[in-house]
Length: 504
Image (cartoon, rainbow, N blue to C red; front, side):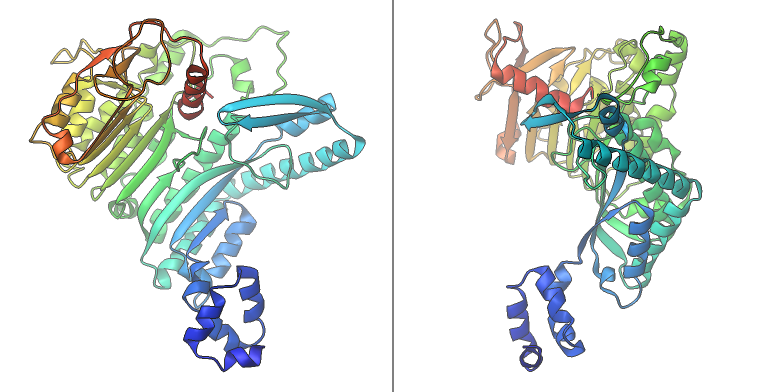
């Protein structure tokens, strides 16, 4: 067969190859050098344009090897880097209780049952725990030696040296390894969320310095914010660890046209017991001893540190060619701190303060999960003169009496600006907006999310598309008058919001 294929024209060989699966194509390439050359055309190369790489030593070493000159790894255009959250809590719980928790998911609903483990299952759990603990130690050593940054930097430098001046996209995600050492899963269930957050932080601290040092540019950067990727964010204070004065990093950020980030509150543990908990059902905390509480003044000072707020603003201000911005905020709900203590609104305030003259090319923006002061949100939108597509989802305004214009904390000025002829909006989508804790009902046609005790006119979603629909159409709204009634719609709405916006 190989002899026959080697005599065919390249166009005919390609028409055959497109009908084969990748393993079959690889087998065919092994038959002879001539066949391998004929088979290696556009279809086969397409399998190498998007690659997913675990941020482990072995995977990074392989990435370095396959990006050497002349190898197919140099064809990559879209890279997804996976930070591995090695969580031993599930296996520790299995060995401690001799039972396994089985979780079943139905949409946003999770149901769990306990099943007794056999001797074989317990033996496997013990082996898996040893494997996960070994991986944790290998990861610690890799990071302490700086080998993670070095290896990733080498691979990205190889891409640049071999003619890949820029990547189309670079994405960071997290996968959790919990109750089976051979399986990775998305962190959708929220089990051991602190492991997920730490893996996200480590992946960020590995990737950004390596990317900057390599000189490779990226058109689209996604940090833990792909569609339907739940319960994974980077704490806002961790964005501030970057050396924003580094010229290499500044050059890298200038190349980005699309930026997507999921960030969260800073992790603040109220007591020693909170610090010992990871958010996993397998946590084994001794509650017979009363927790030691930290002073409230200390917690407030930690929540108010400027490093919690400036990182995102500085990062975005350096992305001067940004056209598409997608920001998601996850609320960790530090219960002892009031909303005033938590100061969530300052994140967007800092962004509004630095965005002037920096986001002149921004055309599309999606903001989800933020608490904001009205005048800051309005300033941010107004300072992006070419903004055409705006999405606000699960946003809450609060009053800020100290503002020069005594902002009342409403969405009125936002709606007015979007409808003004001076703005350039072609599309707006406002969904689940809250004014000082009350859900907004837009006075337009559409379905309501769930029944309430006192009927309120309007819909919770405002969707306008086309300039003739947006300009001059200042939509009125009112606030929910009654309480939410128990219903399947209300339950699913609350569960979806918690999965997407917290707390974990």
